[in-house]
Image (cartoon, rainbow, N blue to C red; front, side):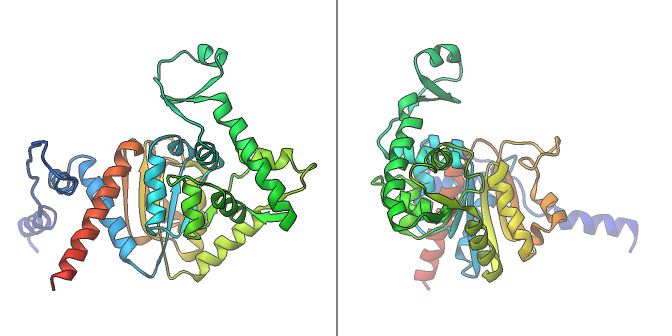
Amino acid sequence: MAEKDFVEEARRSILKERIQDYSVTGRESVCELIDDLEKSHGFMAGHVARASRIIRDMVMDENTFKILSFTGNLVATGLRGVIAKLLKEGFFNAVITTCGAVDHDIARSTGASYYKGDWSFDDTFLKAVDVHRLGNILIPVENYGLAIEKFSRKMFEELVIQKKRWSGYELLWEAGKRINDENSILKAAFEKKIPVFVPGFYDGALGSQVIFNLSTIGLEVDLAEDEKKLVEIVFSSEKLGALIIGGGISKHHTIWWAQFKDGLDYAVYLTTAVEYDGSLSGAHPREAVSWGKIKPSARSVTVYGDATVMLPLIVAGFKCLLHKDKGSAGGT
């Protein structure tokens, strides 16, 4: 092939879709907004639209076991309700998260309120008035540790009568069983029998309460049972997919076990972490391919941005696509 022909062929192979301009009138539906983001493409707009399409395809793939992975800080925000709804609606089959996520869910489920604050509040002042700060969220001291302690101790006393040794995910189902809050992640997981795995179980208030009450109540948590359950899931699943929000142990635990099934078939990362420092939190799906944690053929994308803004857009996007699919199916 002549050099000119090669160049022309190469150009045709990549110059396929034009960037399209759009305007905002204030009357757009969410579905129309997602469509406009896809047409706009640059810079994260196109990634949000792609993430919505990948999750739509993953949800519709009945042969795929779907994992939702997220960090604890998000559960201190109103995004907690979005996550709980994803579980209620059956879009995911398992959760991998942190003890902080469980802590915030339990605390808020007891009726303990979290409040709007500001990043600039003086932390010495907040300490003096017994208020914790999580970014721009304020948590009265009594609404966190004490609320979780009261809830967990009562639950432990009830559970130890049945048996002394519980797996982590069984214990969290029991927590969800005792929660009367429609925005609770644990309640949704219990009702749908979705296992919630917390590999860093003792890195938070609920885990600490297990240790503190071990000598008095005698309840124990067997985390090996959680890992056995994960192994069973991985090896019995035809395909694996995951929406991974944030990094840390919840992200790594998800992709770590996926490698024993030759990697994830679908992977959407939503993060603010960068990859140039070599951290796992910032690593892109392409790096996970080198470890066998994501398949080379996998549908994957990384979306950069604050999950409290980006996740609702992505969720709205894939739900719009699902509704369109159902509408098309109904019309044939």
